[in-house]
Image 1 (cartoon, rainbow, N blue to C red):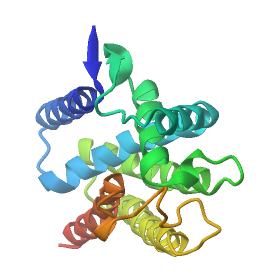
Image 2: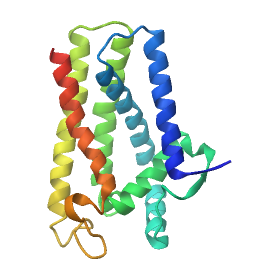
Image 3: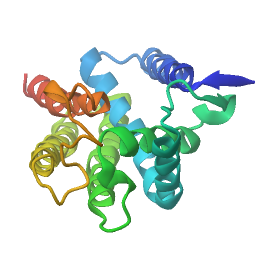
Length: 213
């Protein structure tokens, strides 16, 4: 069975919402709904990041092919198994590398691996521990500590990453330089996939704030 990239993304998100909600009902979770879903999504993101790192070279080759063919994964057709996290990770990180942040498709340095690796280890793992604490009704200092580590790391990771990225768009020696071949557009309108990072800045602030209430 063949599906388009955007359909695979929607199916993946649909499965995520279904299972997160199912576990919420089974464990009778009363925790703040938005915080709960974002912590669960951070765990899923950590899984994607792990597969990006372990499939780094393959993802780079896929990014180069997208640029060469002038195509996007959103409209390309894939087998239904693309929704499995290890496959989906390669597909959408290749899109991100080709059309958002080209540091993700370079072998000259490991900046992208450092960013994704630290997010996976600090944010993803501690988000998982936080979710386990919520499932076991441990709404004590241990939960707050894990949320603080996960979301605090996510916020700092996002700020440093985006700060460096905007510096690169003005650096002629950077692969992300705002050029005719790889334009930013007004408010990154030509690199729209970058806008996903706004959630990685706003949501941890929200989750930490709700944990303090």
